[in-house]
Amino acid sequence: MNGFIEFLLQYGLTGLILVAFAEASFFPIPPDTLLVPLVLVEPGRGFWYAFVCTIASAAGSLFGHFLGKQAGRPLLERFVQGSRLARVEDLFQKYGGWAVAFSALTPVPYKVFTVAAGVFFVKPRVVFVGSLLGRGLRFFFETLVVDIMGPTAVAFLKNYSGPATFGLGVLLIGLAVWYTWYRKKHCK
Image (cartoon, rainbow, N blue to C red; front, side, top):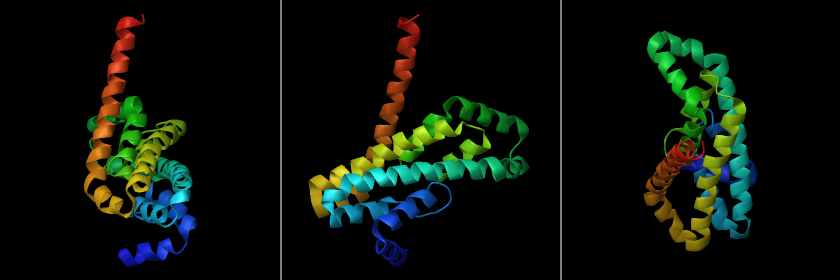
């Protein structure tokens, strides 16, 4: 795997774009494995790399959505009971954008959620916006950490990025739930 990542690093920004796009729908290597080394090599371009990585990943989420919409449902119907499938579809219709944003931010498998969003007919615009939010927070957070810490950021991100982004995701969902409750209660 390390050899393949080093191969992709030779292509710099192009390699980052390809990995960010593909990982959002089918590829197993997360773009972080290219983003962090690229930011270390060219710290002045770090936020540009984070921006491009975010856009490429959000575009890839639309491809994952397309794959799910075209091929995922028939496959899923073979393995999941109709009532259970309907329940999951209802949840995705209500919270699909949040699910995509949460998985885009955290170590939860992002591609599973982009494909599932297509299977359950979540609007592509919702998938794209959720991806922009989640991936943007994640990639800009990592870039900021590398900017602040330099090479020591690699070990820090390896150990703490997952729990930190997961905690941030839980906090954001908690704030969204509170805001929804507050608006219903106080803004009638």
